[in-house]
Image (cartoon, rainbow, N blue to C red; front, side, top):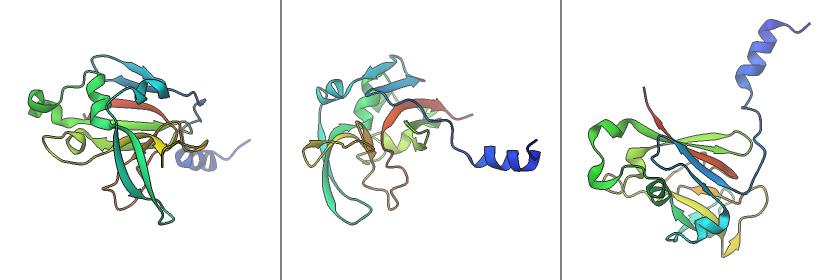
Length: 161
């Protein structure tokens, strides 16, 4: 029989169970149009590039679609139509292994902040490698790279309570 205190500590410190990796990106929850994208679908959208330093200090050019444009494709209210009621929304990005990071909508919205958060699918002109892709968040304005989520499985628009 397992000690209940040990079980509680283990379950509290454990990540959610791994999600089976599929080469797609799901945009869902508080969106008008739930979207499922394959890497090829993302590559047909308006592309942007950012130069960013990785953990080891090397500089790379990442190519992808700005997170705000991915949200726009899912019908998220942005720009002039974004009112104060919607400012409590946030974006939850989940990786294939269950790792999660949060981006407030106000950090992504162009009319509020110019933070080019990228949903990348290429690094230095090549598809992201296994363990990194097929999609990855690149947030070049972050001093610490803890929100640079690899192997993105889903992007969810949530409403703070």
